[in-house]
Length: 176
Image 1 (cartoon, rainbow, N blue to C red):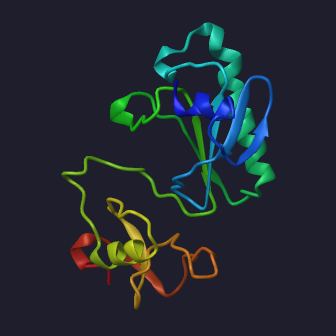
Image 2 (cartoon, rainbow, N blue to C red; image 1 turned 180 degrees about the vertical axis):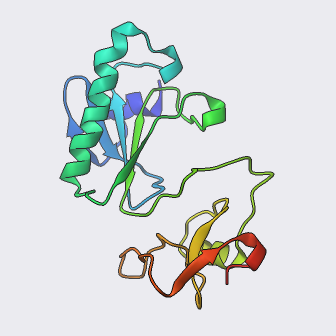
């Protein structure tokens, strides 16, 4: 029995924000953004790669639920919808689920080979102080003085916008 099946059966508590006969949505216990919701079908489907034509309606429903929750949680500035399928994609639970992430700037591409990744020292320090894991950084923006990456959050929880005091940053210039 997966952790999601246990949540569906109410054997494990979760902060449920939406539910119907086919699916359930709840806040992730290890959020990767200020808003990180998991939308899980109640019927076990191990991964997207195992889906069949019979799963078409359910898969469409999961995306529409993501849209509806995005509206409900006021993700009007944007959000990301992610489905990991298989170990190389970062699948951690063999039960299909949709991640809805929002309320912070999300970089693109989302990742690359970690051996080739470069890190900005100033940004890693800030991310550690904010208790978020350092991410591979190819190109992003930093404050010229503090080295805070775009999308970082102040103590008040508001996103730091791209502005005149920011400039391109990469590992080569050390985050300045």
